[in-house]
Amino acid sequence: MTVPGTGPSDHPAAASGPDGQADAPAAPEVVPLLEPADGVPRVVDTPAAYRAAVERLAAGTGPVAVDAERASGYRYGQATYLVQVRREDVGTFLIDPVPFGDLSALGDAIADAEWVLHAASQDLPGLADLGMHATRVFDTELAARLLGYERVGLGAVVARVLGYGLAKEHSAVDWSTRPLPDAWLRYAALDVELLVALRDHMAAELAATGKTDWAAQEFEAVRLAPPPPPRVDPWRRTSGSHTLRDRRRLAVVRALWEARDANARTRDLSPGRVLPDRAVVAAAQALPRTVADLVRLPEFASKGARRRAAAWQQAITTALQLPDVDLPPLRGPGTDGPPPPRAWADRDPAAAARLDLARPLVAALAEEHHVPVENLLQPDALRRLCWTPPATLDEASVAAFLRGRGARAWQVDLVAGPVARALSDAR
Image (cartoon, rainbow, N blue to C red; front, side, top):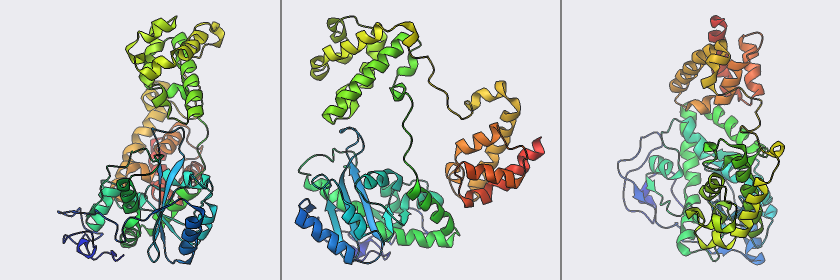
């Protein structure tokens, strides 16, 4: 493929159009990219096809564009159902991981290459579950953030940098569907079609703005990020449960959430497709005593909800019979972090004053360097610094504090000195 920045007219699937330089704003005219340059590849779903794909990719050179598709909202968990890999000199491969379970041979074949992904934090965990581990990463979404782009979705970035329009209508489909429709496969192939060309343009722009090292640090941080710890009391995230101010009703939410989760896991379905959150909260509000009472609720009128109504009512009844001592508290377990900032003025006026000084200072630094505030410094790190600052508020102490909260060197270099001086002067 020949898209290294000469413009949409060079792509066989596009008509003439703007030449979308990396340092230009969004092109006035975006050319739709409708077909991969080499056509839509066949899905790799047999051992022979997989071995051939691994051999060809291992023999290729240069960066590797990588993407992954899940079935969020359809299946239980975040399993990967399609892996797209493109190396410019060997082409694009659409690999179905379901027949294989383990793709470590594919990971080994491209382990020496830089992987180019968009929003790598979304795909790397699922790829790791398949045995694929990157040794170098270029994240085009993170690059867009560091370059100050207002819109950082793949379609918006491709349009701005390369002048092409990517259709995104299949981004939220059920990728566990088999066989995958041709239109979905075309979409999947196009998602990696331009990633390497995009990487080349953005790398040049990062260099021109002095942000190459910043990007390298961010890419390595996302590559090495550990999986998040399990949530404490995940049932408390049930949408609408915050309106319940009664421990018995919260116990019903917990019981229904746990019953739904077990059912969803067994059936490999998204919990929301087994029983919507609104039904869980409606039952907690109504406290039905019998199956007949339960199915009178509008939220339990569907065939699926009625079919499993006895199981839902059993969970509700168990919660209704709990002794008071076993009811969940109104508030979930606390974290080791500070309270919400709205409470600071009453609980610790000095900390509130520090936060009032630090926030606009960090915002001004972010604006000066054309990066989003949250990419310059995680808000949680700043709140913790202001709530429990080090005993000595000098640059070295603040820098050590921020490093301990995961701040990268470039962030510390920009933030530690100004924040330390501001907070020290406020004492």
